[in-house]
Amino acid sequence: MTTDDKTQEKWEVQLRKGSLELVILAALQHRTLYGLELLKVLQSFKSTAITEGTLYPLLDRLKREQLLDAQWVQEGDIRPRKYYSLTAAGLTKLGDLTSLWRQSVQDIEYLLAHPGPDPIKVTGA
Image 1 (tube, helix red, strand yellow):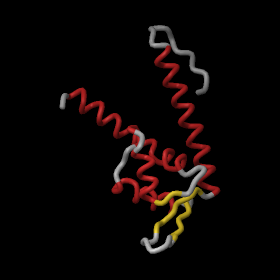
Image 2 (image 1 turned 60 degrees about the horizontal axis):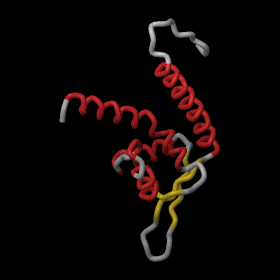
Image 3 (image 1 turned 180 degrees about the horizontal axis):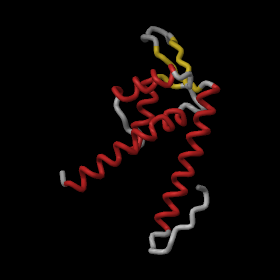
Image 4 (image 1 turned 90 degrees about the vertical axis):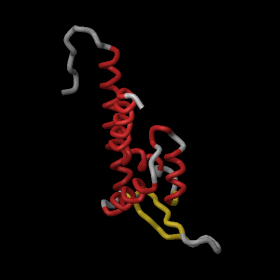
């Protein structure tokens, strides 16, 4: 692995870490999922692929912060599964994080489109 590959991998890891809360809340916005189901959803996207060791502590933290609700459900003879869903506070947090994310993307897109030596016109400071 080259130095450039290592740098890119570190950058991807940091981006993933910084957006995980938003990603989990977004994945649960209109559905209730059990942990392994949520993990599979996240792993279906390269930028959100994480491990169980990352997911479950984060789910526990979001539950303690009352952003998620968790219910154990027994389905037939299989072992019970813990299903996660957004609380009202989680939905509010999702809206806040979504706004921050979209503003960040907009700001980065502006900087990418205006790389020249001209002064940058700051609009939202």
